[in-house]
Image: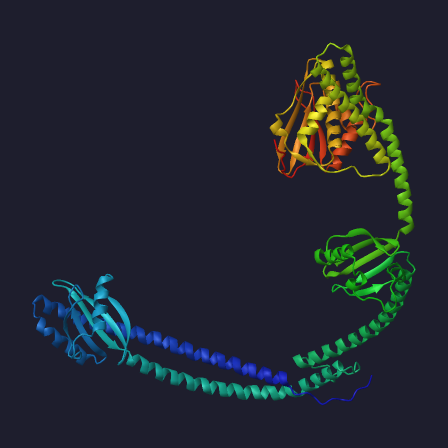
Length: 609
């Protein structure tokens, strides 16, 4: 590829490097100057402080002698003489031990100013002693030195020294440093200019070659002396090697792009030949790809929808699954959806690659219309089989209420009871017969694939009805039953009363069969957060460990042959699960035996007493 030779670009980098070097040199020179001024300031202040302390100590010694002789009128003279001997002393005054002025120099014609008086008193209040203060006044900065006067009567000497001498000397030092710094910077600038001119030509050639190479002229190289070992020559050699390698990589990339295009065409052909529809959504929800089967499954035309929102408009469940996959980037979903008269099995999963994060969402669909029709036919056949199983266990379901009705009829037939007892047994007989009718009705309803009637059931009513139905068996077996107080069974359970009663009839019947004569059967009701637990406990031998695993399996029983069908617990478990609850078993410590506990969901509603 040939390109027009471009003019050599300006050496902006060289200029910038020169400016950077100049800036660094200026910064170092400035730092040198500031450090010199700082060190000079420290030295001057140290000397100034030493001289001030010596002057204050000498003057304090004279003042102590005067104060010992109580010649206080001589103190101003001593302070004035100190000012004449050291012109840096701007003022002086003496205070007593409480910080009150006693005498002052004539340099304070109006007396000790109020701010100095406050300073003297504050000095005494904070502990006294020798101390230094830096004050800023209208006449300039002052070094205020406080020196204690020991002995009697005691007090403090306050001297204010002008800082102007230090400032003047610092100005002179700074001017000297600036002069030397300027000379150094000028020499550095001359040396930098010479170096810049020497490097300009090879760098210009290198930058021109890089610009042409970047514009597409992959044959451009930098002419250089192979024997040159300076940085610019080594950089030119490295540039030429890089250009050779990059040209080879470009040739390989062009070949790889052709191979990739061929591979993409093959993958497209494979995906289009799949029996499952495939749709890929980009992270922003737009459709990145779909195959021919997906077009067929979703009825997409060539100019069809290009986003998941338009493709699945009105399909809330599908949109929720797609949005969840894009948001959580963890969970896959599988669901069935209707599209016209067809049923589609849909699998939705996020695509996440380590190091690259979320790449998008994949949607795989399969037309299962015929499969669903076949499954429904098999489900109906299975339903008829279950009806057959229920019919086989019908004798067990009807036996308990039928025995109760027959026993009630026999007792009435003896004719040795008063009318009230006759009516009581007649009611029990009617209840048992209604129970049989309800069981047959339930079987017929189930065979017609009708749902059981739902409502709200008082737990007390169901438990009482179950106890009444088995009371004749309790009496004949010599057993007694412990039932919770009526107030403990006021919970209202959502569900069919018939089915709830059937659970307790089955559990009580099993407890009667397991308990020895003279034993006790106990019913316990406990409330928990969001549920109510009803336990039926007998005094039998418990359930053998090897039988526990199959306890709720249909047609499995631990009773003697002819005494049980093995359907009671299986049916009870099925009913409990329909209520949204669970049933569990455990063996109790003697004298108790098996404990069956029914857990039912409860919203806290109670029946009226």
